[in-house]
Length: 73
Image (tube, rainbow, N blue to C red; front, side, top):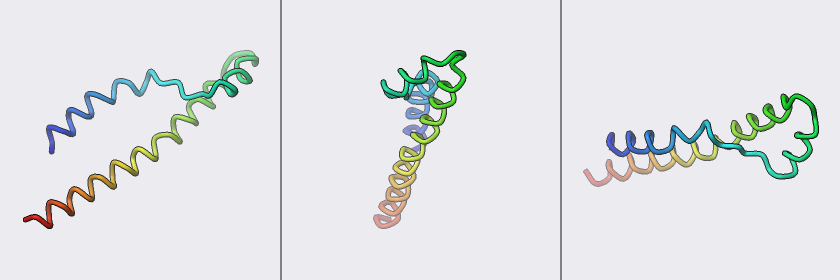
């Protein structure tokens, strides 16, 4: 199990910094403003909200794996 966690960490963690999560309409509206500070804030907010569903799925899979292992011992 520890090997799988390390493999997943090394596969997915480096890509988090390169993601841009704005939709085309949000990007078009926010790029017309000067400075781009609002656009970066909106992008960071979208990324923040996007993480939670993945964390919920990861925890659900982890706990179901623990229950599965406990049942088969």
